Image (tube, rainbow, N blue to C red; front, side):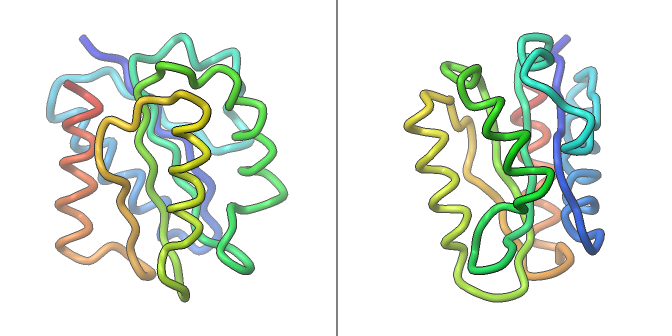
Length: 141
């Protein structure tokens, strides 16, 4: 059985909804799933999971949330080499630049992005919901 962690920060609830859909998809594949807020997760937990989905909305001028998520993620980066991960998040403006920068950072860290990232404008619509469940299934495989 695959062990999956979904780690996220959500300000308005949109990214939390996205996390729930990923968890749903991973559970459908029979994975053992754990959900964490950014404040609850630490680098020491990374080795306990086969794959991890990290989620954060776009903030400010298209960047990761700076008070909780970005510091947590920065401490995790040294342990992401060869780790199966996926990225997701919501936005209210812009064109997804924050996600492209984040993907690039993860690739430089040596992480294995095992599926395409999922972003959605505000709350997930039906297409985003399907993509998020699919992400969960991939993580849970």
